[in-house]
Amino acid sequence: MRSRNKKRLCAAALYMVLVLIAFVSLFPILFCLSASLRTQQDLTAHLFPFTIRSLVPETFTIQNYIAIFREYGFLKPVWNTVFVTAVTIAGGCILNALAAFAYTCFDFKGRTVFYILVMLSFMVPFESTAIPLYGIASRLKLVDTYAGMILPAVADGMVIFLFIQFFKDIPLSLVEAATVDGASWPRIFCQIVVPMAKPVFITAGLMIFMSQWNSYLWPLLVARSKEIRTIQIAISAFSGERTIQWTLIYTATTLSIILPIAVFIPLQKYYVEGITAGSVKG
Image (cartoon, rainbow, N blue to C red; front, side, top):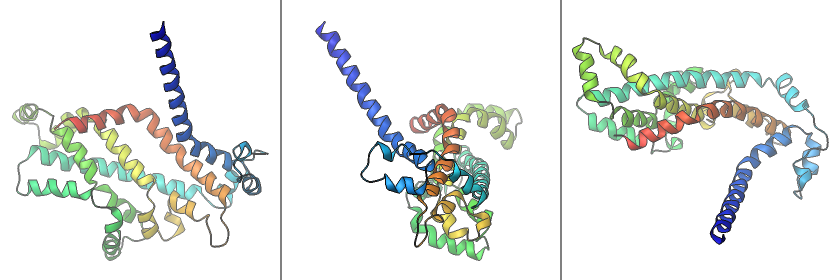
């Protein structure tokens, strides 16, 4: 009897801890949503001291959502971000998968050097290479273009490493049998390797998606005109020298997290499978 009560108490304590962790994790999103549905005056008047009124608006309004599209043209940054992200995902998955496939299936000079460079590429902070990269983009006339935001993000060392770890576990006998049957390397890659690597492709796509969707520094350097600005740059524009439009910032932020959540939730199963496969294989 005591053992059963002890288990119930432990289970209740565990659930309480999990509920607390969930609340702490979701609190920024809830506060952001609440702030987007109130006026600037209502938000600043009840922010300090922090009470329940800081979370619950006096009057709910969707005027911020209307204004952000009608007055500030927020739909254009959303479209720019979707376009840049989608093209980067498509190009990144293909290019990085091909690089990993070549490394796994072929023995060539500099193979070890290639692997070392791949490992080093995602260990070096992007901030340390941003200025030299900008110089290259400027000489190639990629500044203030979609290509300038897409091309530097296509090749990703972490994604290549993830593909390599998965491809190493594919039986070489399967590839050899396909070559004996007369299959070309592009056919082997498209019809044998790609279907087997579906979870890794989804994981790689999600990694590139999150990286590009949340990218701020590189678009800030490259995207000078308003026509190609992304969401993160558009959000920062609501913070001026003299005033900060907090409600519009929270409104734009709320809109910016809708698509990542909508994409990640149904694909999280494959994301976990891909991460697990990449970490235990090889």
